[in-house]
Length: 275
Length: 103
Length: 155
Image (cartoon, rainbow over all chains, first blue to last red):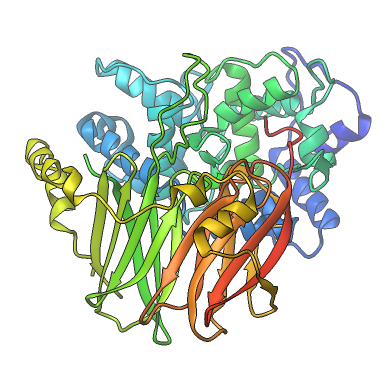
């Protein structure tokens, strides 16, 4: 059976694929997801999903727009710029000369190593290879660098390519992670971010999967700092009373590949203010 | 070290929208540092002045109820090119100031 | 075009900037006054008396207070008080009625400044946010409840 996101959800079972090769059609999954959200909120344009929950609640949107108008993350972006330029030669060797293209070239599937590579992970690898000290994976300097690179890439569309069967299997692994229930509460990512997106968990609005990758790193008002996507994966898993997977490990990297692909065609608008 | 200000000022229909975003912790002196058991020392911007074309037009007093990294937006009838200065001072005497021309 | 102040320009030069800024930090150059009594008052009424001399304020539709119904984050709640339609606005005061020290800020306007301010304030709990406008020697106000909640999954 052709496996799509929705059919997996419809079955409502924890599908454990282990190391099986599964028939996977990423493009169909992506189109299914777009159709699903269109049915949920017919008036919301596709491009607007980069704004997450703010398309669901006018009161929150008004606050968010006031914050974004003169955003609190500008200093962090400037600091990211300084950090990037401090080791410019090193980064250019790894990522090329065009700083606007760095963010948009990740996540990607490395056909040689047969593994997914994400931006923050490759920044650290780049540093380590050049003899520089690695940064904390998801916060502080790394988040600022990520913020700067996202800012520079604004306007470009997310365009993750899956050019081989192995790449598609990584997508499938990410999809599996996304739909599997886990943790003390037995929730899957999909439980909140697909099935219940736009509804409330206490006073928080659940964000839709569609558009998740576009606006990271997020400027969290809560901590008055930037946090990367995998930093949020960690935080969310903790909130859901599940043991988080290691940042830049296979679980999260496959997950990021999956969620990025599912947001293909949407504009990068990071960093962005979030609660 | 001086207080760092980001400023914006543009004129629409004869009214300048003057905005600033200031890097500052706005500590009340009551918030506890969990790691030391002692409060973070009071450090908050107490006074803000906005001068446009040589005249002081806004004179503000702030408290720790103003959010950290404070944002301010005021409107002043003015022309493009007019010079604006926003200056602040905090309770420790640290100052900050930015002068720019309205767009 | 934004022209950097001399002070800002010297910040980049390290030692030079310390020398420059040190000269500005002498006590003699510090400060306009700060109404400690008003801003440390624990009750809104006491704070307003200390700041404005009175608590008598009439509700007015000309005081346009914009605040969220539910704050996304109580520590950074955007609030706007727009009295630009009123004549002779002298000052605007924002009050967070249930904060430990309710007075938030005071903006005095003169010359070409309009009676308008937009800012971000800290709210410790669900409460009435009050915008008070002094115009023509009298006080006018508008208020609105802002709910401050604990989230569900944002951590």
